[in-house]
Image 1 (cartoon, rainbow, N blue to C red):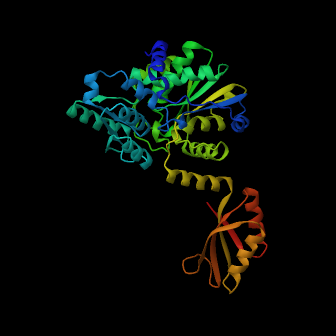
Image 2: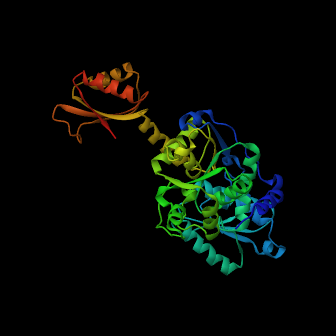
Image 3: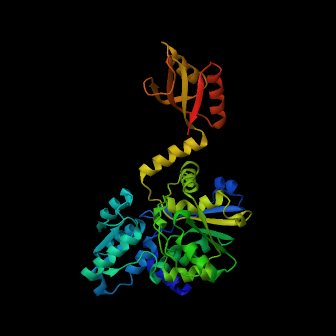
Length: 404
């Protein structure tokens, strides 16, 4: 078990080499979640975009001269890779990182930019981990585990010490869980200092291995799952972290993919914060009522990372706009006569909607002879505006349907 003293030692060891991330209040999300206060610990603002560099640096600073000369190796979905590569590069330690083949390009590119050799292998973290162990044995490198290592856990726990200074009157902290290194360190720091603080973990329901393990009372390995929270996609948690979570964490809840995507979009739109799926699961749990005990309490939300692929952000924004009714696709069946398309676009403009895309389909539509099906994608003001638009077009004698 990692101790409070080890976390305090890690804080002294790391010093000013890791950014002391801010923890401002969020009035926007306080209203959405019914919390008395809601503060966000912005670990997405770290130099490498996530909390992982805390543990990585703590581990590197304890290496012997012989271990430094041998070099280090790690398996990572991205954030641990970047944190280790960045600080190892600053200290002149040769680094190899094995990453899953589907790791977002931004994480691969940045890891290489920090000077590490990147090996892409396997469909998930566990397959990359196995390959890293093989390379470690072949090249005699020092393995730096992303979560199941006391020095890594202690480094991540420095966040808990910062929270005790930044939000001394907090009642609850909501923390993402993958392998469990982050929540283990944070929970230890908080509980050993103030046991009344509740610590709630959040996992993606697609691969909630820690929750399954806690429920079963033993380590459980789940089948590989696909989630946009790739940073916490771990099939089997660690034995160190499992025991610490059993001791210090009050509850673990799960969120689905739509809830995570919605949280990413809300953070981007309302808080102007770029947060990856793994970092957004806590907000997803709060706004979708997964933590009812948070209502009326002083809550801290840990936004653990911001390394998200811009292509994924684009897809999330589009899906969010559709869900909110601000983007809609209508199919309008109307007489196939000259000038009808112009009439349709004029009606849309008069209703205050904006045409994004339009497709005039004769040959492959289900419309009858003498009719045409026009598919039109529109920007609207919301669900009410869509209903108003459909009603107005219907009054012209046109058949209108909404595509999902």
